[in-house]
Amino acid sequence: MIQFTNTEIAFKSKSDKALSKAWWLFKIMASPFLVKTLSGLTKAALAVRFPVAWAVRPTIYSHFVGGRTIDESTPMVRLLDKFNVRAILDYSVEGGETEAAIDAALQETLRTIHNAGKDKNIPFAVFKPTAFVQSEILEKAGGDKSKLTETEKKQAAAFKERVNLLCKTAYDAGIPILIDAEDSWYQDFIDETVEEMMRIYNKEKAVVFNTWQMYRHDRLEHLKKWYERAVAGNFYVGAKFVRGAYMEKERARAAERGYPSPIQPDKAATDKAYDDALQFTFEHLDRFAIFNGTHNEHSSKILAEWMIEKGIARDDNRIWFSQLCGMSDHISFNLAAERFNVAKYLPYGPIKHVLPYLFRRATENTSVKGQTGRELMLLTKERQRRKSKK
Image (cartoon, rainbow, N blue to C red; front, side, top):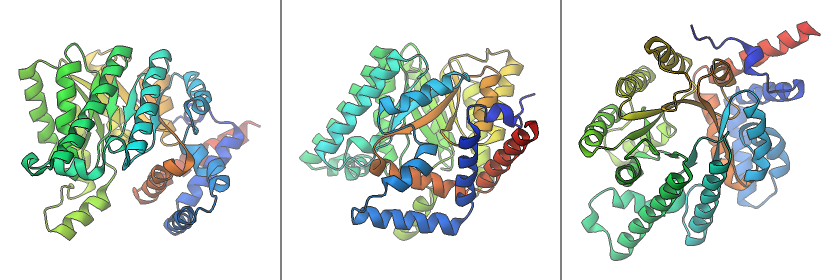
């Protein structure tokens, strides 16, 4: 029976000082007022170019982020390796609105792929699609393409060329590549592009992975249709599952523009859809590879127990478990101790570029019911256990 209660294993990688710092950080994030106030002050400081790195870097940045560069992130990769936990370096820059920004993100992502190809403890590369094209192109290209101007058609084609370059580089390096999900109004063109990549590079196994945000009520059927096309087209599907990151924005936009919200009616529906998607792909492992990206204990537990029940090797490369750096270590490290495939998402990048990611993490820990409370409870338990041993 898989358990996530052993805090000695969960926090074995943390010194007493690091454990205490994590406890204080989650204590602050337990207050929505403090999170909102500090986020607002940081954004205001950035707007007037007031330096904030001195405050951010040793606190929330160092907890959730590997470093500013690949080299700065390497010590964390090596530390995780000691505990059978892999790392996925994620260059956390989004919103490529200029050609210079897009090219810079492309070159850095190519470096992460080459780096992963040389490092046995980095089993995946990853990228965020909005880093590689103006956001309005993603939205327009997902609709009626006849309405695109010639310039917009060229920009959409350039996006596909960049994605193809990244996927080909990953394929040549022998590294699977995860393509993150975006807002629903961008996702159709991303899905179209990713499927094209799968038809090229997933002929022998899953190299290219798409992401399904299961807080969208249409994603389970979308997944099943994708499976049918994969069988008909004789390619494999890399399926990364997350619950979702943009719920409030999605609902607000739907209400503002007068269309039905794409979001599930409640958390129970999201949880059911998530686990149903896991089960569907698990039952069709002849066609799927699964990347179970969740901080949910139940969704992690059931997949691990299905593997045990069906006699599937714990290190079967078709099934991976993943959590974000700085969160849910009790899931990551306990699964890794049981020899399952576990990889921590390790964001990196310049502080000013990574701040949107950090704001989302802080907000998520404040708003997701029980998230911060669970982290605090586990950190407190381990601090008390260590004190009792002294």
